[in-house]
Image 1: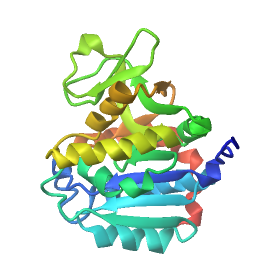
Image 2: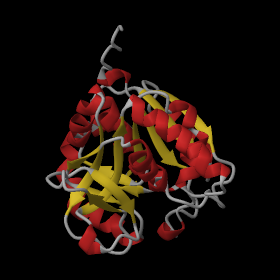
Image 3: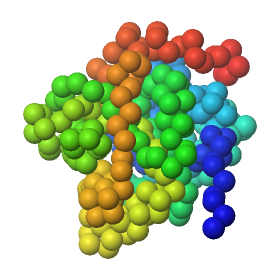
Length: 263
């Protein structure tokens, strides 16, 4: 049997989920989608796409919904060097992120990085995550205590991820999922089929982590924990997160971005 050539990081596809309304970020999202809310004078999406460019990752898929055209226009005006495709979720008001991922499932036939559009992070996290292209799947986790809002991570005795849920008891968790993950070809294929089953059963309001858990449990697919606690990162859900991002996170990562190249 001829082995499949190892994927270069330049060939890795990144799928960004950006369809949601972002109600919790009001009034910042009254006139723009969540990913275009500015931190330090630049949209969150700017920092994400610039990080991808920095690491030579050019294949991007963005699932859009709320004010989709503004995202499309921004990307086309500022990131012409990336190969970006868009998937539209017309039901963004009545579905959760599992449905957005379901609509983009045709892009899950190969190894893929899945990224929430509201995360501001140090680009070195991508360097570590892209090393998993050899076939191992991994999820970025900030190890430590979690509150009620965070997507919590549970592991087995070998330190492999087996649970992903906001409802996990804190004592059964090791930390918070930061909304950035890499899934191998095999995991991605299982995930695509699992998404179809869940949506067929009416699970449009679930988080995508429900599908990831099922792949782990039903197919025994390993999911590694990538501890990114040493890197500055924040998920921006509430107005107070913007202030924290500008005061605490952005000063630590701003050197990664050559802002003079952009408007």
